[in-house]
Image (cartoon, rainbow, N blue to C red; front, side, top):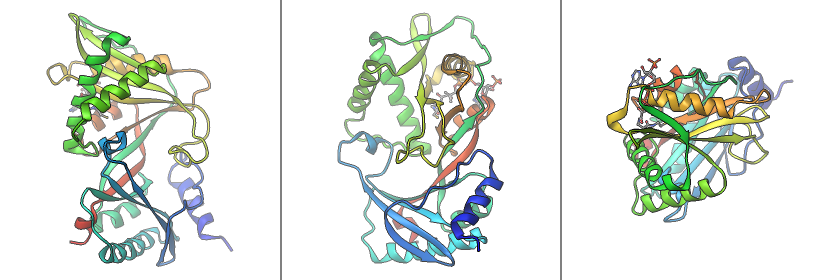
Length: 300
Ligand SMILES: CC(C)(COP(=O)(O)OP(=O)(O)OC[C@H]1O[C@@H](n2cnc3c(N)ncnc32)[C@H](O)[C@@H]1OP(=O)(O)O)[C@@H](O)C(=O)NCCC(=O)NCCS
């Protein structure tokens, strides 16, 4: 007899060839309903921490193994989860999240019906060099320590924009946290490319290489091997829609490329009116979607 985990592995493989086999359920409070099994992990980020710029202070993360009728299974699990939330303290500044294959639209229906909204997409692109693109008068170059202030300003602008359309939260001290992160990144050799026009910084993109390692955030999300990634991409509001983002991305793709690379990945907010269309035109497509709801909203 095929186990539920085996059925889920087969479903994932049929849904999307890039999905790695699903790992076992991570530690957390067990929850079972409608033939589905799950765990709820509770995470709390420290006050003043870097993570709180990109997340509510508290997270409940649901992981699931669903039966063949995956939509009904997810729906039953979410109802059971909701009953638990109703009994617990619905703390402000908190969120419940589920990360699920983007192409599993049957499960997307159940998530929408339970009030969850798509919050973050992990999108992938086949390995390829960047298609060269230049913008007249704009130079793209590697950053140096002298660019720290401009990079921090652009990252702050990106955080501010993301706070309206996704998971960013502009908290007190955000700029200092960003500056520290930029300083650390530059010190440890993280790549940041910047676009300059008449000596003024008009855009930036960060990038690097990572391989999923058992227990880290990429394990179970991407097939094993070396992946390139692009992190923060931002162009100043006045310079947008002139091809500067595309020029930055082309250089980053080019420099990250190697024949053994499995591909590149990015994260974006599906409700951002600028970035999904941009990334899709650069060859990315969603693999995983993180769905979220605040406990208070889930109980309405
Ligand atoms: C996303 C962002 C970096 C794009 O930079 P940009 O310099 O404006 O983008 P480009 O001008 O290079 O656009 C490249 C392509 O995307 C298309 N495009 C860009 N924005 C678009 C939009 N809103 N609607 C339709 N197409 C769009 C362009 O037509 C262009 O396609 P083409 O070159 O094939 O004609 C910029 O909008 C930005 O800084 N947004 C705010 C911060 C943000 O959202 N960052 C991304 C977080 S993941």
